[in-house]
Each structure stands twice: as C-alpha cells, then as structure tokens.
Length: 83
Image 1 (spheres, rainbow, N blue to C red):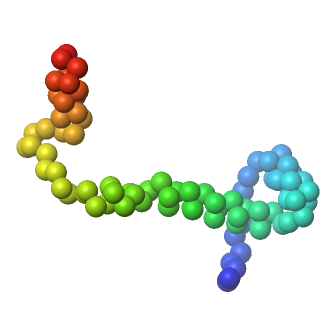
Image 2 (cartoon, rainbow, N blue to C red):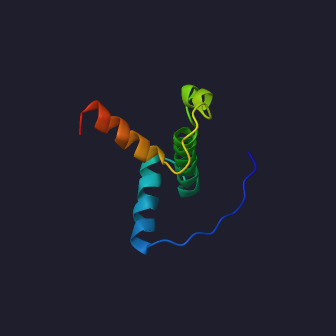
C-alpha cells in the first residue's frame, strides 16, 4: 500500500494519551489512526448501501402527486387503528 505523509492537529493531552495507547498496543500512532479511519469508512459504507430487497423494490411504488411518504404512512396507520 502506498503511504503519504499527513499532518494533523489535535489537543495536546489527546495526542499524549493516544501515543501511550499506541505504545501499549505495540503499534504506531499513524498505524492506529489508519486502522481507525478504515473501520469508520467500512461502517459508513455498510450503512449507506441499501440491502438487496430494498434495492430490488426501489421504484416499484409511485407516490400520488402532492403526498409525501410520511403522509401516506400516517393515513394508512389512521385507517388501520381507526384514528
């Protein structure tokens, strides 16, 4: 993997604690930061992609003009529970 140098600024005490943590873990602060970013990005990718059923169903239903999905849901729940 190709590496590039990155300069960051952070609270002095936070950097001190992070360096101690990295030393206890037997790794570098750079490596620890890189793994942290990879984990955050992996999690974000998981939450942003629709599942296979959602992807398949996308576009199957057209909302009536002037009605939001929330309004339709409220109406349906009102009918179901006789509100």
